[in-house]
Length: 592
Image 1 (cartoon, helix red, strand yellow):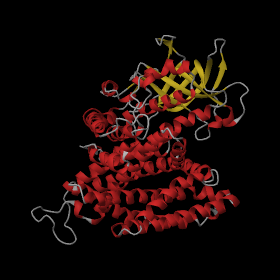
Image 2: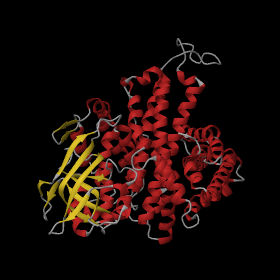
Image 3: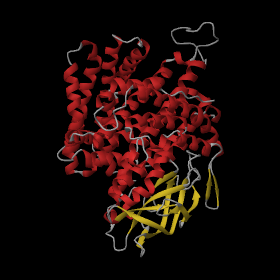
Image 4: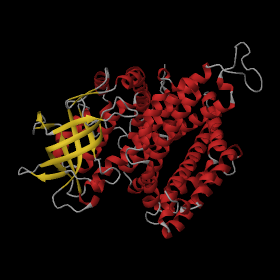
């Protein structure tokens, strides 16, 4: 049977020592973000995930959903778990106090999101999507719509969903056909069908608020003619009271490789009453508000799966005995040594640990930068933080979801044949993680966004948000003898990243296929160097803490993992750079 224990100590280290969030007390929402708030929040979140959500993960996967004439029946225990989640106030954590929220920063919410994704990813999709819908409504809807819908989404009594995809329109949303026609009362009638709508129908909440992309009559072709509409499952009167069922129907649920306890719905809108969000034909701008935030959360889904996969692989490796260590018996009192003594098992486990702890630092830093980009009182600081977010978002989504799937596969490998058996649980993590590399923009699309939009933006302005602080860090530590094993490889591989960036800039202009064909390799190259920077920073902090702290085991493990990353993972950038600079000719001229 699988197990899960929330990584509280690592969260504390990252929030207090790595990000030092107490330095932002002057930023709205951060005033109380010290240990006296952080500790009970982390403890209560861990209790919810370990004791309520995690026990439903395997049973939910096994039982799955049931579709019954438009209804979606969730697995046993999910409704009660959702009510516990709501009663704990978790949906309102980062929301505006004017609408019933607690106003706390996203960086404090991110540990909860990871824990939820580790303990029960299928459960986590519904509150995650609701938060995205809330963000879009708050940034783009008028005050009337905000007052009508935001408070109940904030409380968690209503949920929200994104309704983008159609059978002929996935990545290319310019092909959508759902139409919206004006009614005489200022509302609109939506007609059309949507597919792959996560949490599009269920009975966890009293109402489901659909944010739907559709076209107005005479709208321009392509994405320039798309508008965003809000359409509730049940109509709501001016006093916020739920009325009759809207003309929205779930026509079925998909039978999927993973996420068996999360409804992925086929939705039909037959003249459903809706209201315009924002301006006509500006729907993509509003939808990207949801998608940009969602891409970080999807990245955390990969991270969450990786963490629980690692925990179970580590526990199994400590317990399973097979053969003797090649240097002689390590446990002579046993019939064989635990497999954790074997070099390749240790390689896999350390790869997983380096990914989880490095990825966790990345996710929390991205959440902090998102907070600062929206909340910091200084305009220059907001711009600097936003530049970092814009550049690193596609890297975060792709790196954490690629890695989540890879780490789940490593967990199966550590388990050997037992990893292929459902009882041990890790095969579910492989199945659940796979979709994260696809939805909210495939990882190939993230790479095209990085290379095609982010790199050339204002002659490389976004790039400075990464290269400048890295250069400053290297300069600060270049004469520190203890840091040389981290600074030297970081410096070398930053140079490789710069070479790849220059090559793309020069060759991508003359041959767009070179940019498109090398985008994924460049994105991975960037991610590896970014994580090297993150691990070097963690190592520097750990070295200082070792001189003053009693938590010797924790900080020594940080340094050991940083060393492993630099020596065993970072060198893959060399082959990525070689492949990138080989160009696209062999791909584009091949007969397929």
